[in-house]
Image 1 (cartoon, rainbow, N blue to C red):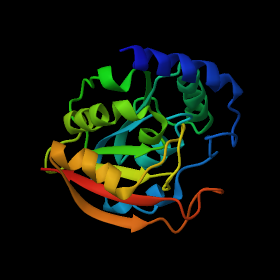
Image 2: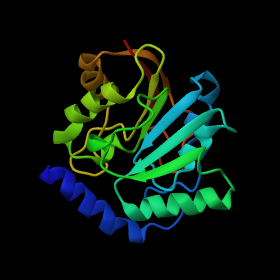
Image 3: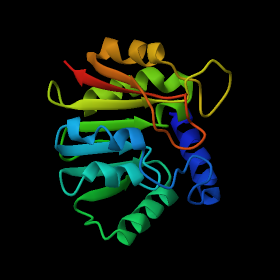
Length: 205
């Protein structure tokens, strides 16, 4: 619990520095996700660590999905709501919740799509197994899909972001019942992230 409280404190203090297009804020939806949208189920979607909600808006795909953006920092949620209002997106279509991922419980039950990008890599390594266990409770069995954009791929110490790899993510998810459906190198990345990303789609069996 102390680590989770530390995370809330850290990100709550960090977010006031984050203008659009600075630090981890990409000022737009993730190209690799946008390229994958047609292959993903409709219905409901969740984006943990949603930040300003660029990917939440993309996932809603003109009402194809009802999307929940979750962030531990209240300011992130407020910024996401501002961005949604700028685009005149219905709050029933894309909603934002301030809360702890590990304690989150959706009223609508499991999700058809969950998207993780710069979320796993931002948390302390000691919470990774718990992350995988929680994902297994959030994704619909058989029909749902977990999309992990694995970044930053490398071998280095320290973080966040902490070093990621395909093998690391598989080692976390496979014991929880996830089966890899596809994995591809990302050919179009946000500036500065080129060559350090792969996108994987997982099915919970």
